Length: 191
Image (cartoon, rainbow, N blue to C red; front, side):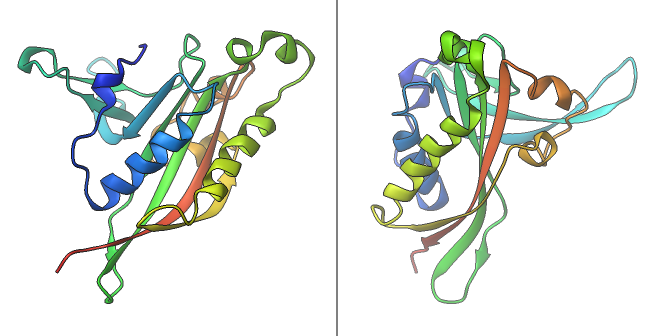
């Protein structure tokens, strides 16, 4: 699941898509991020054998060829150094020509792949959170949309709150770690 940068190019994004794409480009500059994804969709899956229903984060990746388009599941993966994706709620019109969205940025990292020596001594998840928060803070006034970081969490159930996380414990056991930032994003809507 190594990304091809062409697959992640978003052509002419508008409104909340443009906001997430701008943030994605900035966060992707962190050296430990190998897979910076765009907005994930919530997919419903039903196991035919057990009848169990699950909801998973997936993203559509276009290859530019009709036959190769596909969806990729974005659950934590031990083979990936660091991935993140966005989760976007329904927008609310504030009445002044702006739409307001709750946006989550979900991170999943493998500490051992990021820094094996450091991982042997301690779980350095908070250092990664600090780096991501710093990028979000530095860029707060750099775009033509507004956003505010409202919350950050390392709790697995809160990190993947829109999805089924029956295997939640495995997602946050070293070397795997996950965390999330919750933002309020405000974008101007054209008349």
